[in-house]
Length: 312
Image 1 (cartoon, rainbow, N blue to C red):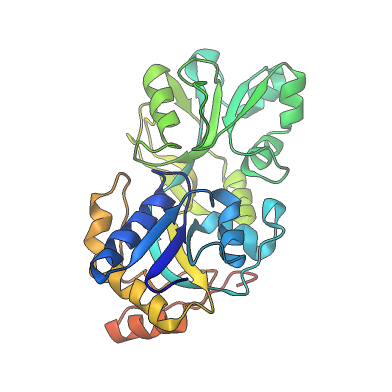
Image 2 (image 1 turned 120 degrees about the vertical axis):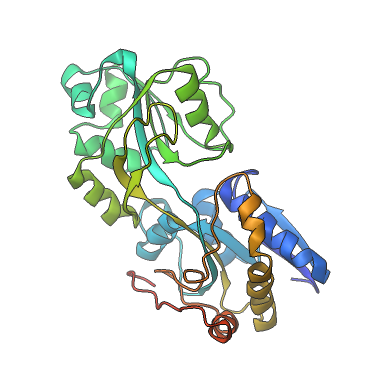
């Protein structure tokens, strides 16, 4: 890191992680800092980017911190031991599951029973991921779906295919939140162009997802999208974490915390809902605060929480 140069690792341009990077950039600009926000550090690559010093500061979600803390699946090579937190930003986000209503499917159990060749838009296919856990809970796997003539489209903000607009998607499983982002646009397209039926998550499945991915229980609020015609029991990951390595100089880490705090109103005018909650900013379940950041929050009277998750 050169004098007053800072690199922030985020995700796809326009996604919530990227937006947090933009807020950091705008907050530090009046102080003469040149902040570069990078997008190649998306998904599970974000934590390794910070570990490998490709960037000075990262933005990621509680779901990825949970995987890295327990070195699960795609996070097997991640390590939180040298990382510390700068700020926790509240960002409402749930897991949604929907099918095209014309298919007459009221539960994924029916997909198994009828061996339906469903075309699924969801995250990665790795064993142990959300899609794998949800399908196995209902007694089948993605391999089964393919053997029945179905197909998987990998949901990503980087996905360029027009699968939803072309009407070739039957089932959707993915993060759902307000905001027309590269990831969220597929919910807008699907629920406007098709009549989507949103399915409840069974309490036992909610428990599985919470244990596996660090989610908490939540409710997709009625009216969030067309087809969300009731409050839907689900899981949520409501926080994003701005973080860095332990050896980031204290004057830099503390400056970032102060600048973002003083420009907290920037979070109110972004493409997706964000909340800078001062009773929450110094709390997270995975990383201790950078000492300089902790000192700043204590001076301001903001609450501090000690990490409690495994691996923290």
